[in-house]
Length: 262
Image 1 (tube, rainbow, N blue to C red):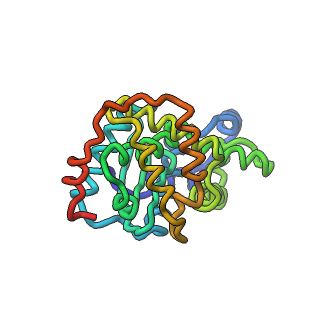
Image 2 (image 1 turned 120 degrees about the vertical axis):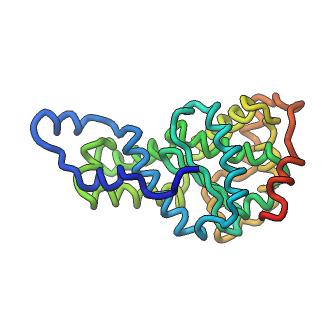
């Protein structure tokens, strides 16, 4: 698992000069790339730790989540991205993804899971947000509505204040308002596909949503407050492919990997 610090790109984009002439013109049109994506995601990753109890202190559990998560990332639509997975020390069932490959689950969420297929469904959903750049697309849409234009390299490089404003808006999307419900449905669909590609029973996410539906929304559960209702998500998933019913859920493996650690 990579070190969870803001990438060096954060400082780079807060301090570099745009230059003059043709370089500035090119940068003013150039959409943000992977390094900018990582810079945004790395800054948001720090916010996740600050808001949700920091890193959960169990290296073995962290390695297990990374193993399952990285295996899913390897069969995703962006397998070459440098992914990072972590468990945060929050009692509430939460899961997050920030741009650039950062994925988090709370220890509270792990406590309600029953098997590895459910875990894979949750991680697959979050990975899909990254592979399809859902947060970045939402951020860019909000920028355009506000009259600021597209997210570009030059925009992020204007000043530290501009970069910080982008991070603030991205944080509001992820932690407060949530993504458009259709993006959540797409992440569910792709997350199920990723788990199927890896050989899990792809009904794992559905069974997790049934568990989630029985939980009372807690004050600290961003996962419940910023997503469509579990019933809505189940309805959309049920309209899709129901294959994967004969594949394993790895309940014993999940129990062995988490028992005494959560």
